[in-house]
Image (cartoon, rainbow, N blue to C red; front, side, top):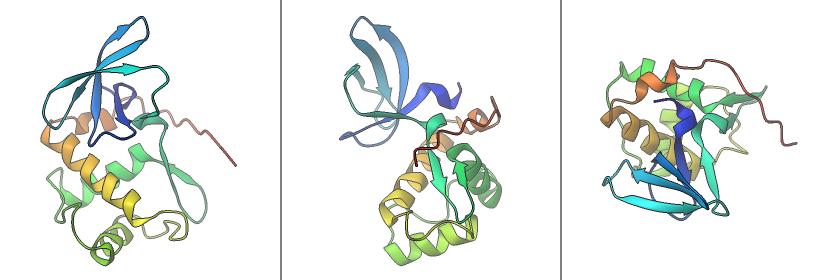
Length: 141
């Protein structure tokens, strides 16, 4: 499964994978509890393959950031929890991505990235990081 099929739904915790399309949207399955939800096309969703992280020089695709975490952790779960303190999360993220833009990447963003990585790792979906290594850049500035 590629990152094109994994998404974050605003207002709902964790990540979801697309199971089927419907007339008005799609059915998604939670990676946390495997419950299926119907998602309307008007819902605020983010596909993981389209997310990027601000660095001091460019926007780095989330796929690349997750690969860096995977390399640091040797494909295992992260050494910190997404529930750790802001300082601990920022220190960890600085080790992973030393040139991230501290003014535009918030602790809440780092929490999500750590949680998402651990969910992907738990469900053996880290291989999705290798698929489709084409870089898509959506400059929204």
